[in-house]
Image 1: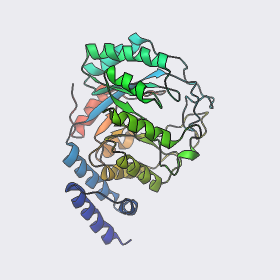
Image 2: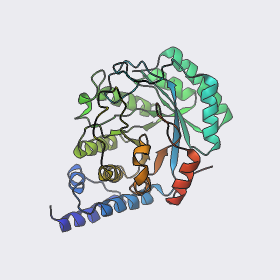
Image 3: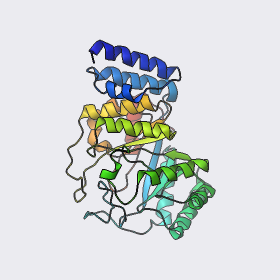
Length: 327
């Protein structure tokens, strides 16, 4: 498509989105071919400003159950199908979890999540972690999130009664690519869990990982799937190659691919928190550009199996990029 036609298209799409309309999947696919990507990034930033303002929504996570996972997700260091050096433990100590939650709260982090490996957390472990959540809720106003696999309705209800207001369940990638990465469960099972959480009134956080061999059109497909599910918190992780996993040698994304992905996710999901999540170390050299390409949220602190970011340094970064953060 001619350059001037693409430029006219992006201006029309921006006008439509700012007025409450939506971009179509064919249009998003066309925009990935824009020669001047800077115009796309600027448009994404303007749409973020319009719908989300300058507040940076932050969250932190703690690996509450590590390793020995029965699922065969090709990217995951915690899968029992892979030979990695990840720590293995059944359940984090309650005092450790409470301490990290309070430290994060004192630094102004908005949400805190316990994340567990495995297809679904056992009822015994769920009851134990619900006690941890109740204790945190009694000591702090930090919002509570959980990421515990493919839970049943009664288990999600137990979390809600313990004070958990948000549930995290990534769809991981595009529907057309999912079965190439995972065979022990389906995306339909993930979507069923998401809908159960939504029916209980929980906020849902769901996104995925980019750089696992998928195409840009498949990233766009994932963004539209999340839009159809009415997801308002979308973490985008950048694959960190882990030796011993099935895709540990995949080629890294280019800077342009990363920036374009974030910008298109913003255009497709204008009212969602597009969250810069795992893999931030890989894009430290372009992080300020990414923050101005549609991002409105970030995962701060350590990740599941890797060292993450320094919260105080993040505060400086967010402020210099025009964002505000509590604390």
